[in-house]
Length: 313
Image (cartoon, rainbow, N blue to C red; front, top):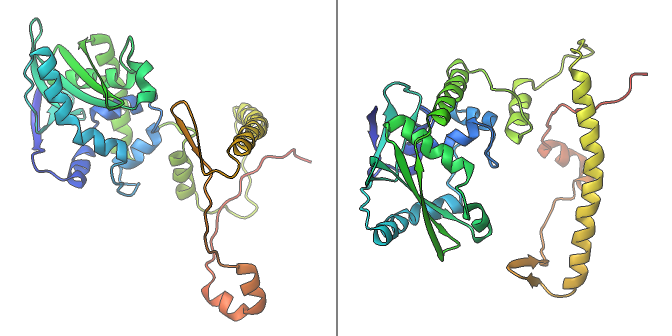
């Protein structure tokens, strides 16, 4: 079911990211399906099409990688099931756009060879692991089973650095069929360089700014009737922003009042800081007034398109 696309042994992070652009990986599955809380399909499309700059791995991703071997070892110790580390990037024979980078493989007494996936999670996410597995990880391992043909997967997680759990997931053909369809459609967008449906992400906003940087003076276009519902959505959201911004500021003000002259306040497991900071900023208004020639020499001119909605008078 799968072929070896590349060896990941001694592969550095940047090279690994370049290989991932050749297809859709397991951690991409929830993004393609639109349920990932951290990344949108448009942002993923921009990554796959080299329209976003290279980014270093964040702290959570870094420590997840560092603790992977510990989770693997602890799982084997508690279950008696040996786990073989897999240092290969796999590719589906039937659907070449589907890639898999497994944390390990092990043997299930009924299903035979299966997938092992190691995770780490914040203590704040303990509830997500109580009776189930987070949806994003279910999609990830089902994606891996689509690539490998395996019939099951173990997921082991270290929560908050002191709680260890593991669960077994059986192959689900219905989910796998959905993934093949959605990921195939998404990969078509990558290959044709056409963006997926525009969403509310910052990546989508950046794409539109880059795609249409300048307006044609006094040009006008008749929009479709569907624009009316989008205007209602925009105006309703704008009203809610004011309400929630005020509520947020009220909570912040009351917390500041409680902290007073102190720098740190604690309640339960939460830590609040209100710290004195200092910074230096150029007074551009004074510089322009007192040294206009110098200001003009070093001033950077930027252009952007301002968006607004108003009643037609």
